Amino acid sequence: MSLADATTTDIPAMMAELGRNARKGANALKIATPDQKRTALLTAAGALNAHRKKILAANALDMDAAEKKGISKAFLDRLLLTDARIDGIIEAVKTIAELPDPVGAVTSEWDRPNGLHIERVRTPLGVIGVIFESRPNVTADAGALCIKSGNAVILRGGSDSFHSSRAIVECLLDGLHLAGLPVECVQLVPTTDRAAVGEMLKGLEGNIDVIVPRGGKTLVARVQAEARVPVFAHLEGLVHVYIDRSADLEKAVSVTLNAKMRRTGICGAAETLLVHKDVAATHLQPIIEALVAKGCEIRGDETVQSMLSGAKPATEQDWKTEYEDAIISVKVVDSIEVAIAHIEHYSSHHTEAIIAEDPAAVEKFFNEIDSAILMHNASTQFADGGEFGFGGEIGIATGKMHARGPVGVEQLTSFKYRVRGNGQTRP
View 1 (cartoon, rainbow, N blue to C red):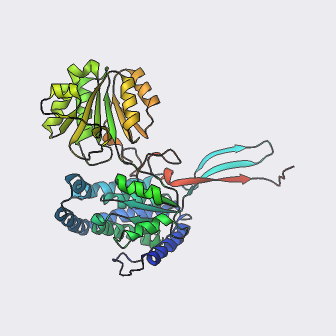
View 2 (tube, rainbow, N blue to C red):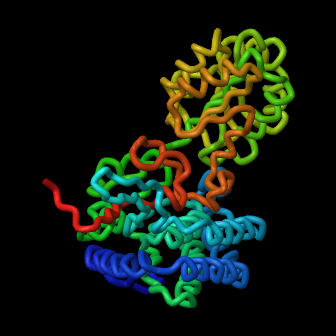
View 3 (cartoon, one colour):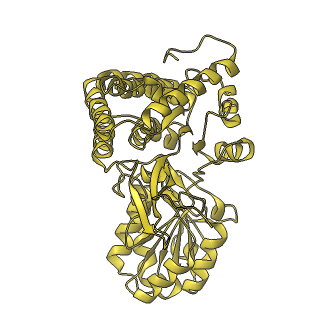
């Protein structure tokens, strides 16, 4: 299937063809050598660098169209590509290329009393469908991770990032071609028609093995409701930072400021700040002042409002909101138990952080909070596959089955058992 815009109006037929081609690509990729996959990715990284002007020009088209639509600043920030961000994409692809190849890795082995030798080995999932919104870097991350883990991938990016994604995919195809691998291993849905998403959720005649949605609550909800194949859910990032009574003031200020304001539109950005009442008098004011100085709007409970005349009252809806903007909800809590209860009630189970010097408080927080990623004295903006050493990520899975947290190459594999005998029969 060409990367050119599809002219056919028969979306089901077009998507079925993508599925069949992807299965062929998956069958070739699952037996590709580690050197082939490494070559494909390093070549792709070189192509991304060589064609950066073309990628930036494509992104400029997307940005111009998005601005004319009146898209939010947070969305525009996710969509924007710069030389520095392209450098980051290139580095991520290179890092993924150099990761240990997961396919065929023996994760466990043992001998049975009857002489059978059993091995559990990693194997690709097959064909992965990735449905995402706005962020062009997901195109490169998902494509590179799938190649490395031996999976074919069908990418359906948002219409707002279509030109950027297409330019990036062309670089991935350069790498596949040079490595002698089918270009069908990575395919971009060549239409912005939303009917294509519906066809992917049906499974493309059994040719999609897993769907990964990466976007807002509406997208994820639709995928979970309609998908006929397994889903790695990447839910919203309703992220909390809790300042414990034992928190170091300097860490509390710097970590909270970074967690909220480094990039407000990413899923690891803090949305709610909880502060223990015992340090409200000493810690809350400096934290709020630092946030306000960076342009952050404060929505707080009565205690917070009494300390900051400009703070707006926090409503019940605020505790449930992923702002993706320079806004944060702030609450003073009576104890760590109350903080944990608040997080468990409102969290999307993505990422939470505790700022504390008391080891017992940290262990309690880690043991009782049921989120995919937990941070101690570190910014929640580290909730990223690249920062975990995975090179990149295809998403942050917030479910509990198979994969959880950043989904990298290992999480994109399943396993099978190899049993070796010497003529044994079962009595």
